[in-house]
Every structure is written in structure tokens, then in C-alpha cells.
Image (cartoon, rainbow, N blue to C red; front, side, top):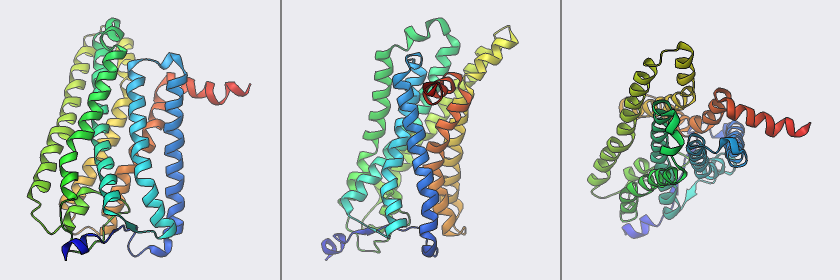
Length: 310
């Protein structure tokens, strides 16, 4: 009996009670998605084509942009499918795969922000040895390690989903699949799937944030040792973009966590909106931040879009 029920596809959910406004809501989502694709795609193209950007800092930025593109491309089809066509059904396999990509890329993004903090520490602590310490080979190894961490650590809780029977409602609370959403529908002992994510978050997101904070304490200590006030400002200015991206990421993570943890009496629509903010705001803001705050990126964009026309 359970096998038959488990074969029933999951049903995605848009904005409950606002279905009549889905076509209008979809316009803003479409604009945001296109903006994310264009801005992050432009950033990747620029870093690839502009040889002055072939430095460790920009290689890590390219990984961040690629991660943001990955998150966007993973959620966009189902979100727009629900809003445009009311296409809610999603097979179990497709749902598990989407959840796997979403959670893996979230861990990757946290890891990339950590290695970018390490990059800024090396650049300020040992500016003369910066490129000799962070060689291309080392950047590749660090990037591969960040990707492997994200895509391997999430495997256990996703693979267990496929072994659970689902005898409750098959309606999910978002227009995309999340592990914590799917696991609520399982009719089995889900102790492992409740405990493992707590350990995982502690060993990735929380640990990453602590290490980023330590990196900036060391950076600040190094900067304070620089005699010239002008040089101090110049050194700190190279960190502004990264600090802004870290704040955007962790503020949205913290907001989403608090809503899910303590928002028992908060309207469900607020939970849904916070989830979209978490998945859309960092990918939308990161390229804007780097375009505004980083002179080399700004010059590259000006050259790409304006000087080529002259």
C-alpha cells in the first residue's frame, strides 16, 4: 500500500491564497531571475576574458558567481512552472535531485565565502608573496575541496529520502524541494535526518562563519600595524566587497533560521517569502556589490559595454 502511495508525485506550492495573483507575482520573479543570470554570467565572462582579473581573488569570485548561477538555475524551472502554468507535480527522483543541488550549493557558497576571507588575509598579511602562496594550482585544489565538501556531505540525508515511504500528504510548502520539507511527509523513523543536518550546519555554516570572523580579526590586527592611515584605508577597502557579501549571506540565513525556529505563530506566507529572499537575494546582490565596490570589476564592465562601442 505504502509503495503505491509513495509513487504519487509531490505537489509544489506557490503562494497559498494568492493563486489569482500568480501571473503578476511571476513578473517580478522573472525579472529577478533574468537579472541574476545576466549579472553573474557577465561577471564570469569578464573574469575569463580580462587578463588583469586572472588573480586568486577573482577566481574565487568566479566560483561564487557560478554557485549563485547554479542555485538560480536549480530553483527557477519549478518556481516559474508553478507561477506561470500551475505545474505543481514533481516526481520523487526530480525532487530529491533538486533538494540535493540546493543544499549542496548552499554549503558551497558558505565555503567560498570562507576561502575568500582567507584570500583577503593572505593579500593583506603577505602582499609581496600573495601570488606565490595562492598559486593557480593551489586555487584549483581549494576550489575542488570546497565543491567536494558541499556535494559529498549532503549525500547521506538525500539518499535516505528515497528509502522512506510517504503515506501522508504529498503537498510541499514551497515551489521547490527542500530536505526539511520532504522529510515531514515521511512515514518512518527520521531521527537520522533530523540530527544529521544539525551536525552538518555546525560543521559548515557555523564553523565557516566563526573562521571568517577570526580571519577578519587577524586582518584588522595586521592593518592596525600599518603606519600610514592612507595604506590602512586602502587595505581595508579591498575587503569591503567581501564583507558585504558575507553580511548578505549570513543575515538572510539567520533570518530564515529564526523564522523557521521561532516563527510558529508567524503567517505561513512570511516563511515562504523568507525562503525566496534566502535563495534570491545573495545571487542578486553579490555581482552588484562587486561591480560597485571593486574598481577592477567596474573598469572591466565599462570597457566591455561602453568602450567597445566607441
